[in-house]
Image (tube, rainbow, N blue to C red; front, side, top):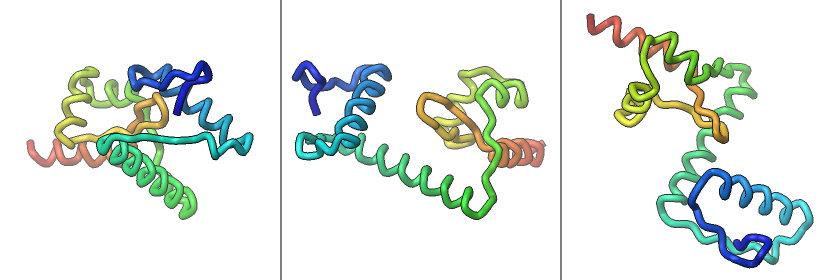
Length: 123
């Protein structure tokens, strides 16, 4: 997919991703699907599948009425008494995984409570 000026998009920052998303939505809404060609790396494709799976989970929970409360990163940092770097390390090591909604990093309240319980059980 190319930018409106005809140059290809480069995956460099969130602003480009946001602009590309907006342009793609505009093309789809206007029925200009014959102009769309998308090239993804294997890594990008895996990320897309992960996001789709998370979205399907959230929709399924909403339909069942079991939607979990989402907490902001700041709320979780205060709740656990840790800094941003610690949350990042825990996510990297699969201790406490965030849910990303666009640019927002959120955490399921049940995941945080489960994490707290597991830490208490260790002591």
